[in-house]
Image 1 (cartoon, one colour):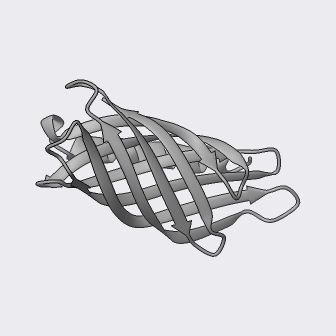
Image 2: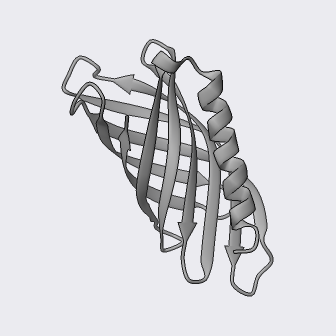
Length: 153
């Protein structure tokens, strides 16, 4: 966990920069939790969802997964398209680049680039809150399947 804190801080700074650069009325902030299946680790994360065109969004995010012998931090620049926006829920699909920092016990730390492929569903619970579920495949030299549960405000 030597470098996890440094990578996480840099990711938070990147999310903050994305939030400042986006118009306040078009940005939604979110938190998420879930599991990195291959690392066998739970994670926490944050995001800034910004509309860039009708139904098309930029969603930079940070996820930190900590396990006994395998820690993962990802900083992602995901894009997605919302389908079925006239219903009481959203369905989306998308992808984007990811920077992955891995620390394993008794192995050197590794940095990697990857591609996120994702799909999700969010419910229009209220004008201010959107709970959601999202599945993601992180394609890299060490692939990860990720299941997330989140809330956007």
